[in-house]
Image (cartoon, rainbow, N blue to C red):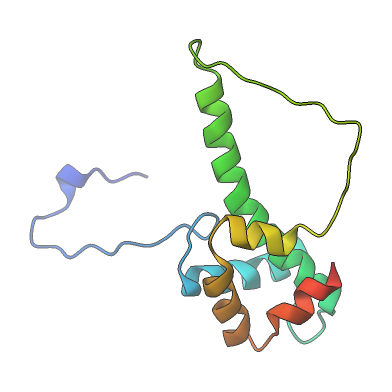
Length: 128
């Protein structure tokens, strides 16, 4: 059942809630980490390994990357957009988690969300 804004009385307070998949606040990131640990990794904090927690954090970051990537793909579908591609024979796969935190500009809120969960971000990054 959906509710239109026209059916909400004018004096009724509303609450803005960030989406756990795309939100960038510390609380949203902490909640997303906990949700991925339980629903994606199938673990709860008492039995989770550092690898499970690392994967949960990676999924939290992936959710935010995916939103931006799909927005970019949507823009590229416009007929007036030109794309230049560069092909390199060298392919170096390296650690991406910390780079993605920096590129998304969420290193500080993720660090705080992880700390509030009783974890150490540097240790999780070393898991990679």
